[in-house]
View 1 (cartoon, helix red, strand yellow):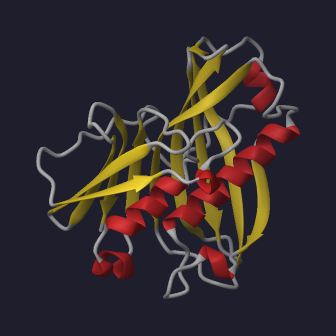
View 2 (cartoon, rainbow, N blue to C red):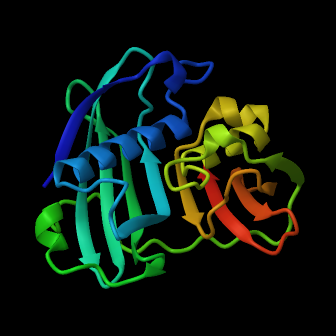
Length: 236
């Protein structure tokens, strides 16, 4: 089952160069994934089981721009044990691929990791032969040993989603707040995210940044540094 929808790239979706931001790309993916879930009858509230996003790999061939109408699509490639693999695409008006992504999701029931229920493959309509990647399980990003920069933030209420966690897309807004201006303007060709531990409302976080070989690593940790929340790599 491949779900497709057209999306308009609006003013809030783009940066100073009118190109689609990384956070906006993830927001589009989040919306099309929600459409897929709604179409098969899954809702946020009142369900014993849920999915937790554990990682993303996003490759950008050409960034959508302000005013463009693109077609986004998503499908579930694989389900095995507790892990599901979902892919995404963004295509332009002529059908050319602009952005691809692969993501890993862990199944949870009653707040514990649990095996994916029987019948889920049929419900989601798996597409095992449709893929842009030769891997299914993403490798966790290793955090660098040394950092150049540290900033602290309090998690605001407007970043919190229906799960009472910092929404996944806002990590990329945090990235934009710490990377140098030249990296914001240049914009990365791909990025990877390893989500490790959720962040909740009003928690204090520390964000670390380092640049190596023209690529950037960003690590989000708890205030006391005891918890690594997320590791992000930007490839230029």
